[in-house]
Length: 100
Image 1 (tube, helix red, strand yellow):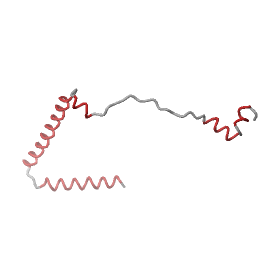
Image 2: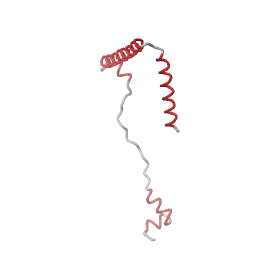
Image 3: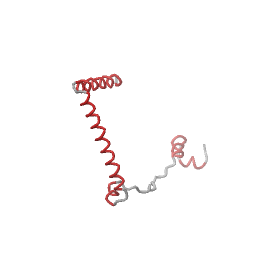
Image 4: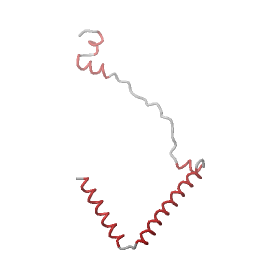
């Protein structure tokens, strides 16, 4: 069901792109492709350079979450084995005395 709907969506998008690009000349398609490649390249270089520039800056450190050590978790002690045996075999005094 999901696979069929994804296939239909892919085919629909493919048809729409082919229809939109079908009216363009070969030169126009090349210009559009080169524009997208250059735009993506410039954006990638900008992100890389700005990340390298911000390494170690105080303002850049504020943007990240502060990582703390794991604190000890306080648990209540409960002896589940004795609790089970007391319910199954009798009272606490019978269990402690050893009478079965």
